[in-house]
Image 1 (tube, rainbow, N blue to C red):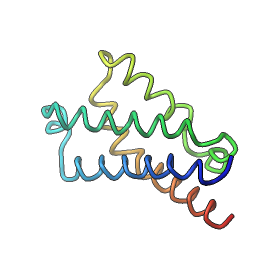
Image 2: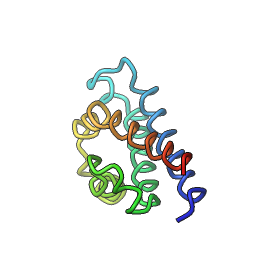
Image 3: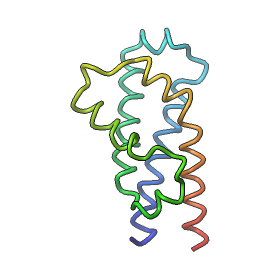
Image 4: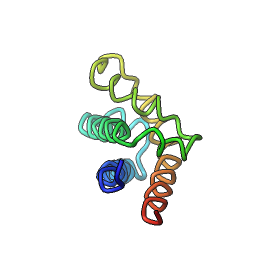
Amino acid sequence: MPADLVRPALRAILEAIDGIKVSTHDRTFDEFEAEWLLRHGVQRDIEIISEAARRIPPEIRATQPHIPWVQIIGIGNVLWHEYHRVSDRAVWNVVQDRLHELEAAIIAIEAALNEG
């Protein structure tokens, strides 16, 4: 797959991560849980990340094997179809513990595409 077809997905992921980081900066879990708009905005950005990750070819995802791509792709389905079972704590934990690692991986993928 040509790099030009992958770049929009990478940009979408980075933009969504940035939106989550900005909106949750200096926030607590209690604030996150109490603010409907914040929760739903973060969930929407995670859906975007999930959908964009689907557009990254498996051979490119394989260059970052430490990233749980299957779970990233799957979380979008959970947020979309099983929204009534979504745990605010689980979403918060993803935001706090996993986004930095994904962001670094996407930046590395983007750099490799620019070199190639």
